[in-house]
Image (cartoon, rainbow, N blue to C red; front, top):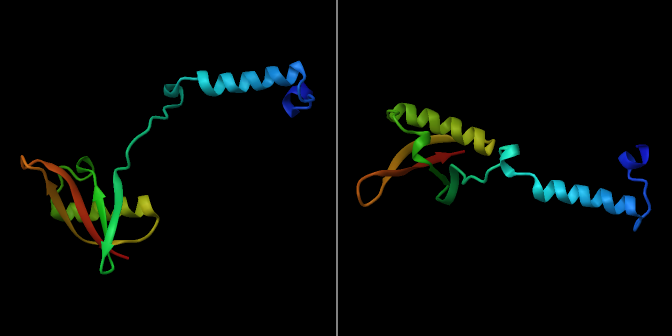
Length: 111
C-alpha cells in the first residue's frame, strides 16, 4: 500500500500502468454533475473603459426588481466581490433590446 500511495513503482511496470489507467479512468469517466462543475458565463464583465471611467456589463437577473438606489448599492457589492477592488458606481443604465426588454445593465464606476 505504501508503494501505491507514494508512487514507488518503476516506469513501464504493470503496477505503474494500472495506476495511470485508474487516474485516467477517474478523469474521463467521472460525470461532471458529480462535482456540480458546470460551465457558466460570467455575470459581471468589465468592458473597455473611456476617460478613466470603468464600464461593467451586469446580467439583468442580478439587479432585477430593485429601484435606482438599490441598484447602485447592489452594483457596488457585485463589483467589489468580482474584482476585489473598491469601485464607486456612479450610475447604472438598463440596456434594452428591440422589443424593449431589459437585456442587462451597464454600470459606470470610478476606482
